[in-house]
Image 1: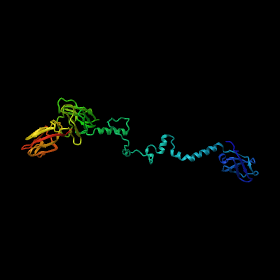
Image 2: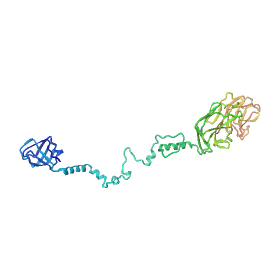
Image 3: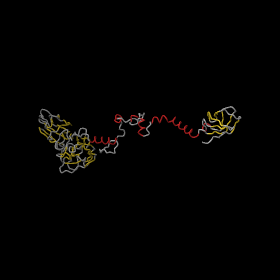
Length: 397
């Protein structure tokens, strides 16, 4: 270590104080170093009060001077600097080293800090442990449910996987309930264009709900006028047209094509008298009905009974398919006594009970159930004159 000679000093005979000018005693001298005074004698540095003042032992013996040259000889040397540096480090980091323990390995430090598990690390105000309870309580922000069900794969995030599972569950709504059907509304655009809205239905052969995306059809050609075309949702999710009807009408089950459980019945359309297209209609999902909106409901096709003057039955199957259970009609009496209508299988004679009653010279729009064989019984004896015009029907699908 070099001697300090920077700046000058002032000393006083008999005094222990040395005053420096442009001399940094604190940075360049240590207690115990030798001070070589202007008188050429060596003194021991007893204290360093500031960068410009220190004290010596013994008191200065030479003549009083100022602005004089001097020297400080580093008697302590490098061992002293090293000891000072080490002591500084010990004072600053000794407590930290004690906390880290005596085992100089990663495992040893973790053990000393109690970090062998998460119990050694307290929670912060923001970052919390993901306990089971907290994980279950996490909101599914950003959850997206695919419109088309898809399989969960290993690369999916939790939100993506849950969304796929929900989509699969949605597609299975109604599974185990064979009567389930939703949507699939029939919309008459023209006689040769029938739209079918999106929807889903339970298909027996698939044992699950099948979805249809929506589309339109052109009614197929038929060989006989006033013939029904029956529409089915297949297990492949497409619409099929057929002249084969559902086997019979029944309730709380899935109507299907006769002897074909892979075809779920969704409705029927009536082809008009020239076989060129479908009669105009409105399909109402709310009450599961087809209402005809033809220009002349008194035409031969929709006039099911004309001037009935006794007791008898008339057939509704020319305008109501086998799935229809109730006729919406205009019930007219142009006679002089009341007429009555009831389904032919009502279980009681029309003389004892009826479901539609029309006074003389009156007309009434309303409903009457249809018998299983498709007929309705009427009584117009004694002067009545019964007429029935079909306006539409209610059906099961």
